[in-house]
Length: 323
Picture 1 (cartoon, helix red, strand yellow):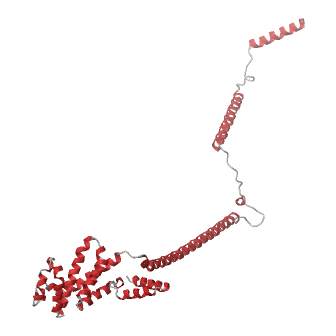
Picture 2: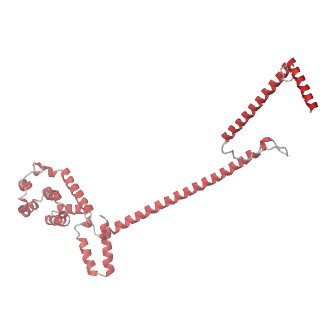
Picture 3: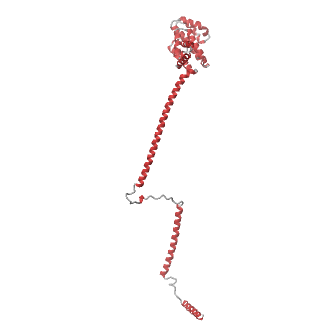
């Protein structure tokens, strides 16, 4: 949480701008004694280790009480066991360092001050034997705490636990200024990059559309030129023209071309039938003439016919005379 230092600088600048000199002195003094170390977990772990190494039991208890009041008490109830486990492990680690530093007086001070509090906790029953044990590093109840693996695991677990809390704890508005400013600058840079890409894409699209339009216009002109060239290239030089040069008129076809052809065919059939019947009549007449069967030339006079003509003619003549 490095932005906390930046926020502290903003507050200090504002107090100085307003002329609050006493407030500025108090603020600087409290910053020097800041137990949260601007919420930097590595600084808090270093402070704990310094208190343990210096065998400052009261300072260690005060620092843990501060963390408990400002951080741990605001956690959910399910984390209470984890917080208590870390606290007991820190106190055991204090005893281990005191024994390794050959400070039995610090061990006796520890049990003298904390015995009323620890006696009710079951996990500390065997630890009351710790001041009287000659080789506690070999005792089954204390041996694990002397290993480097246990000590490193304790510090790493405490570091991760504090880091998680600091990341999840609610932040005041003033501490979000730098974060929001950084986010705003990042968004502005992304918007500028996206806007540049969009302009580039639009320019490429416009260039492609112009190239396509130019190509289409050129292709249409080339097609028209080729059509004119094809239409007039076969025309011979001079005044002479051939049939290929004549372009037929666009005459629309009749609406019922099939019916017209049917009528023409029917009229042709009627004319053919009349001509055929007339030809048959002429052939029959010619055949009769050539065969002597003519009704005029071929008929012979009989005696009765001649007598009838004579009698008729005489009678008629006599009738004419008498009349």
